[in-house]
Image (cartoon, rainbow, N blue to C red; front, top):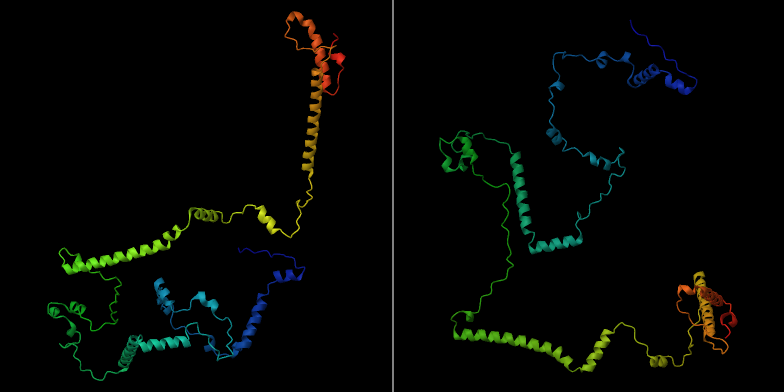
Length: 392
């Protein structure tokens, strides 16, 4: 029993839903067939040979495509060597429209076109014979290429060569030591001497010797020289020493002897000037007065209004308060010393009492009273003398 699919019900309330859920493939196929008939003509009018193909091979016979073996990766790479690389396809023009200007000027790369200067240099080198060897080699190569081309075009007319004869062209170059009936022909042909080289042998490099020649010693240096050779050697040594002495005397004259004329004081002054070069010069009032003659200049420096900030003003206020406090303490201290130092016939000075024993503890009350009076005097209150001193 075949399963029947239920028709899917979808909403078709707008044009977008109609376009999405309506199947119009049959209409498109019909229109495509009509367009094809308009281009190629109707099928009813065409013969059967143009529409159908007669199969003569059959099912059992292999086609040509089945005989093709898979190509190896190495051969595939070699086959693609002549193709244009894909990395340069972006440089090619995209448009298939032909160039309207058929005689467009081609831009040659820099250095390919000979300039007047290069022509002049080539001409000078040719006159000097620098290019002579290259020209001869090029002429010889052109001649050989032309002969080879002519030989290739020649058609053979006579066929009288005996292939099994003794005078073969290959047998002439076989060494005589190998011409034996026991040596196989493969070994003989393997050792055939070549007639000419395909590549010319490069010439030997000309090495330029730049080393200095070895100096031959003087004959007077030998173990047993002749008298004349020995005297010549001595004269050469004397002349060499005289040159050295003369050079040393010249240097001594232009350096050491020139400074001997300078005295010790002048030398010290020169040394001081050299050492003080670039340092600020000391103030000289005489020079300053001489330079400032005829010019009016103020004695006092210019007044500048330096404004104080809050911190500076606070510091100044603290210094003033500290100064006033020290001044008051000094006055109070002076008052106390005046009290002790002022003599009076009717009063007596209270001397510092020695340490009393515990049996005299009743007198401590008087001492505490005097200390309290003294402390009150330091705080700005000056007590009366009757409060401190007792009547005699």
